[in-house]
Structures are given as structure tokens and as C-alpha cells.
Length: 193
Image: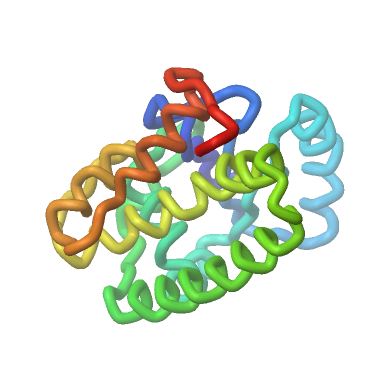
């Protein structure tokens, strides 16, 4: 075992029940069947609490993944807590070019999925509300990644990144703030909205 890293909403103080879970990355020297068998009972117990299985990497595979997952790895690199071992993320190189490519791919794909999901709501206000609440975090992550092209240091909290990006764009991102308020319980949903 090289490192265990906590990342995500729990680290930046954005946990929102029932939408949030605890995200963990585990970096090992080897990840063969023997190591996976050792991790399996712990992972099952971890998942029983509603958490996703840990991201598993060897150091070599983590280095090889930085070009494919720059959005996720930049977020983890900038906002994490070390639970065990060496801070392997500090030395992880991530390219802006790879970030742009993944961001464009993700945005286009998520918009296609959002439109398809909207069609399946049949115009039901409750289903549209649920779709917006379920989609919020994904789009906030992509907005935060977009902000990296305008600013060197981006806010750790996704909702703050949305507000910050609005300063650089010609269109209003207020809808993301409103959906966040619904999610947090600070705003009541009205069926005519």
C-alpha cells in the first residue's frame, strides 16, 4: 500500500445528503488478483455504507492515466486529504491540452445525455426536477474544469467555481445556483418553474 487519498465533496465541505458519498483513491505497488482479493472484503463493507468502490491505481498506471482523466485527477490533486502514505498526487503532471480535449468530449456527451433524459421525462415536472438535481454535480465539475482556462487557482467548492466562471462568460449561470439552492433545501420547488 502506497497511499490512501480522500477526495471529493467530503474534503471541500460540499456533502449533501442523500446525494454525496465518500470518495477514496488507493495507490498500491501492485494490483494483481492477490491484491484485489485482499481489498475485496473491505470494499464490500465500504460500499455497504453507500460509498463507491475506491479508485485503484499503481503509481505507474496513475501516471499513464493523467492524459486520459485530467478533469478528475486535477480535482483530486488540488483538493484531497492524505489518509495514509505519501502524497503521490503532488508530482502528478497534467496537461492543459488534455484537459481541453476531455472537457469538450464530456460537455458534448453530457448535453446529449441530458437531452435524451429530458425526452424521457414526458414533461413531468417532478421528473424534470429530479433530472436537474441529479445532473447538477456533473455540470458543476465541468464548469469548474472550464474555469481552469481563465484562472490559475480555482475554488475548491463547485458552487463557488460556477459564480467565478460567470465573470468570464457572456451568459448567465444563475440556473446552477438556483438548482443548488433546491438541492440544499434553501429554496422551495414550485411546479410552475
